[in-house]
Image (cartoon, one colour):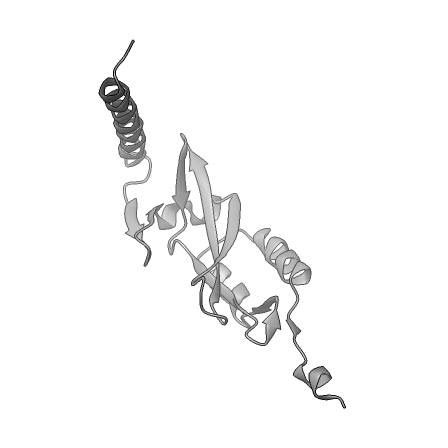
Length: 149
């Protein structure tokens, strides 16, 4: 029977080996994308990013720039998975709107389409973003209802 320490060390070795394998996959992608860089956000999350992937991205997700600010910017992260590695556009996120400070939902930036075009993000993502805003319309809370006598 393996000791607790031996089990712990085996787990750590497995974790490190998985990380080494991931780093080797990223290293191999440098030959495909010589301008690949590692970017970090304010939380120190890593994004492998290159402008070369911008016209090829095939996935997107949305996230607020801050979890505590009621008017946080809404970011779109465009990427393509290659050999198990997410390769992000450059920039690795694009501001497309902001959280509605007066209630719920999101308010689109008036320039989000231009930003996508400027960075050569495929046009089909416009429909994805439009759907996000249609599914999350800004609804303001009305404080006047509480003031009725």
